[in-house]
Image (cartoon, rainbow, N blue to C red; front, side, top):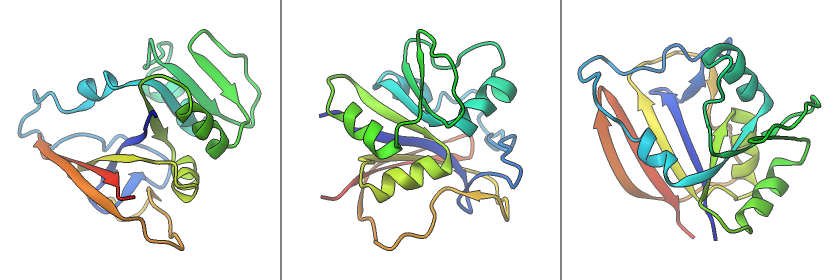
Length: 177
């Protein structure tokens, strides 16, 4: 069965965006700006991207206007705003847990849970995230949008790997079942 993988960056104090939803702070410390990082290798492991409407709008209006950043990947945007599907992007009102459960049951590579916070929190609550690939950025934001909200239950993980480059640290955990 395919895995649902959260691959995301956070500040050292656990925020995935600043108070206004900005991500301009997503950068290393400049100590090794040519470091490849883990992103390209990660992209080879997935064929599906799941993201929320706010994340989608930020990508297409701020981060990469005019060019879809996940070519060749089937992308599902969970949104309440109706939009026309494209060849690579499906806009859906489907509940995140239902969509990801259905995708996990289909053949294919792993599924990237791209963000944002509400989507991530719903999928964690539904016990659907199998792997957590968290890149910790060298910045303390002080406040912003937290990646992990309070949860009534502990989530036990097993450390799979770590990697550091350009002042950033990749932490990869899998669920302990």
